[in-house]
Length: 148
Image 1 (cartoon, rainbow, N blue to C red):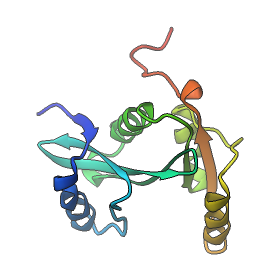
Image 2 (image 1 turned 90 degrees about the vertical axis):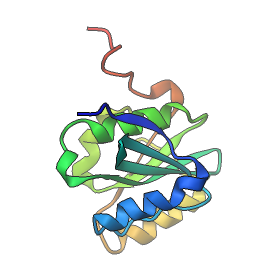
Image 3 (image 1 turned 45 degrees about the vertical axis):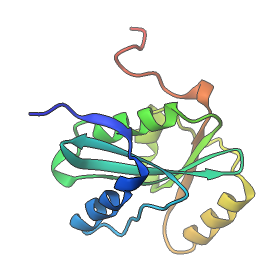
Image 4 (image 1 turned 90 degrees about the horizontal axis):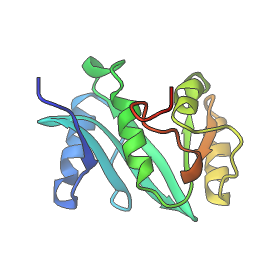
């Protein structure tokens, strides 16, 4: 099997991200004002968006092809993308995913920019949603380099 490559998606290839989402009946969409990151095994197998907000980034659109879930693809993609960010990274997720993101260096103790706080409040009207965030100095190291 081909090795998985984690990298930003170049602007001319952005339509491939939406094609990936659609092929899995996901409602997620790649946005033009974001950095798009993908995991590839020849084809795109996972993706996410990093949207500039205030003095950091909002991570959205994390999706892994169902056949490859549970194999560490999402974690590696988030780690790789977040490692390139100068400033905090925030995300919204279902409370059941809190442990997954905490393992990657995110925490509940987060100071959201006003625009994200307002959006979170709107989202919480319809579903359970929490905000998590991290700063570059707090991000989890790659498990291969973590002290034992």
